[in-house]
Image 1 (cartoon, rainbow, N blue to C red):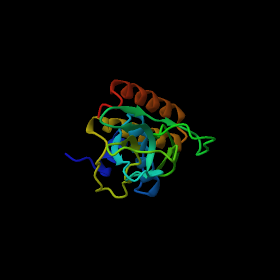
Image 2: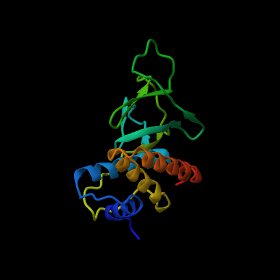
Image 3: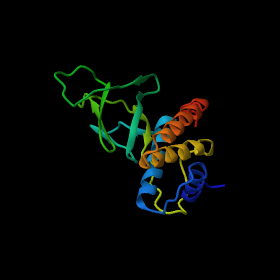
Image 4: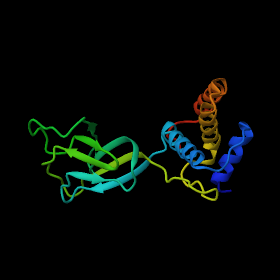
Length: 189
């Protein structure tokens, strides 16, 4: 069974019975909740890039919420690259890229930029993408697994309670969210 936006709202209003009309706030809340759950559960996507042309930057197919790991992979080795805060390089210190710099929304710059790549070198990136927004009741969930459906519903309820200034209910939903999140293994999906 495919989970739709209507299912999310129906489950949320069953847990937090309050009158809402279908409006932009509800869809913003739903999309925020889905992205938060994807980030908290570490639902990563993997992309590979060849280094044949010695590119200075790599462009991911989707915008990222978080980049978890960037590897330089060859037949003989695998190196985990480190994240740097900016592109400043005082001197050349390696023949292979050893660092990377994130540039929102979907670019990753490699350091040093004047490296020499072998023919089998490639970069493997594990990242949490920004999910495609749901904008209609019939939109179907394509990324979050069904076991995490309850987490999305709790995040929606949490935000609705906060919007209603019901901070005791918000605290309840937040505690329940943390308990349910602890029962699921991060990065296992």
